[in-house]
Figure (tube, helix red, strand yellow):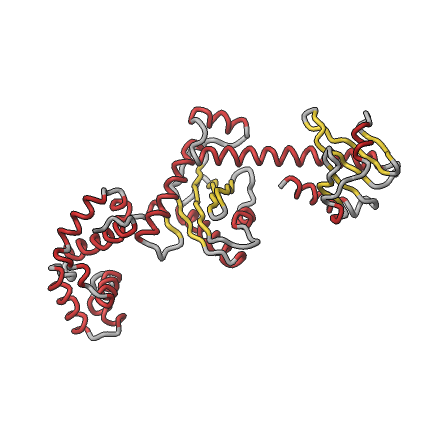
Length: 361
């Protein structure tokens, strides 16, 4: 990534300096150049440059200046001419190289630090001290977004996300693997959860429109201390896991809005199986066909309203009543009664949970 920044520097100065200008390493490999065709080539004068004791030198019509970072020679800047002004140009370019390297290293260190916090790879007692060393504010509101994407060619989700949140010192984009990206977003003191969900929607929409990338986003809770970022990340993970079971049609799942799914997810499978056997005796659930299940889903969506459900299903009201009577006969539950409807709804969710774990017998 720092090489890309060096190339950007070369592109910016090439209109100011008439001659070819570039940066190479100690082996003469050209890393960045105003003439991009030379990138990757070896400068034939590298041996003479390395043997010279001077920082600035002119060899065979080319000007060179060694770049030292923390008393160690890291790069060599060059201009393919012997113009008298080259020493001035190279001093300015070398200063920019040092600043770019310092910026990149600090950013890299910050990202690695936040990644370590997220993945619990750092001792809790070291977090505050390290954050202070890296000039990262400790006590501000932050939230973790976990973005799972489908594989995409030539387009990387993290690049799109970085473009959406360019505040490098406050928002951190972390790559876990090719399909998993984490955004640690800093929030203002007057944040609200509408703002948090709006950010998730922005990510989802931009991945779709700019990269044609399908994605799902889990959102953790807002934390007010850098030590708690890992917890917010784990909650975002849990949100995606639970959402995949109970609300697979949703692309944004908020840990704060998991509802009864979170409770069921924490129950032992053995207890869930006992509950299902109690509710659906003698294979009653399996006796419900797809049309009947669709009727049940619509009935729940319309808050047990017979008239509205029949309208949306394009059936006569009496037809719907007949179907509800049939469900009662099979299961022993009258879905028109609130208590029976709750039992049935919970039973469906428990069945989904067991099926997802392949524990249902």
